[in-house]
Length: 207
Image (tube, rainbow, N blue to C red; front, side):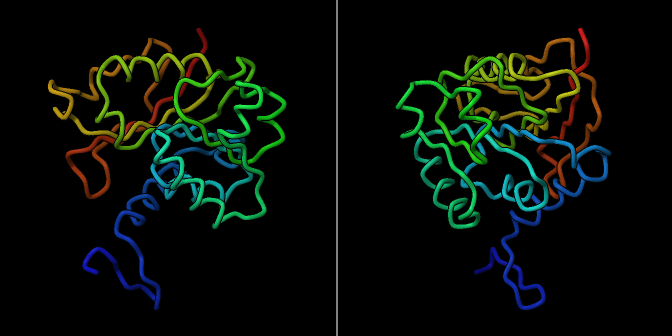
């Protein structure tokens, strides 16, 4: 396959190399990355990027995506981390809520959007890579409200999306995403090997 690179007798997907570079960038910028204990990734696909955090740090991850993507990420991550405790939609349906207790006793939580999530749950890092650019403004605003509500002081948000895309019928620009005034910019630069996409890391500050 032309999409694979052979390195030291291992075949590597080119997209995985991009993920590794993003991860390396974070490690070199965030001095306390090993203290990040909870991560929420929105639209993470089959789990290729979040896998790097699970492998390298003792962190809890919460993935939000459409049901079809959740099937793929559940399979991929369960195969990669068979000893981890998973909380899936079938578990959520028992209470119709992700409680703080369920959150604390599981390692990997995978749910579709618009689930009922305990307001006591907070995340150290939010991630969205190359999927908000596919959403309309209303959906983007809903996710930003979620990020604002479930972040704490000094929470981080990694936002990697196109400068502009028109797949929903009108321009969606990263420069127009609905950040509130409580974010400071840590990194703002073109994405590695993808100069049509922007790499933006921000940190939550006190009100």
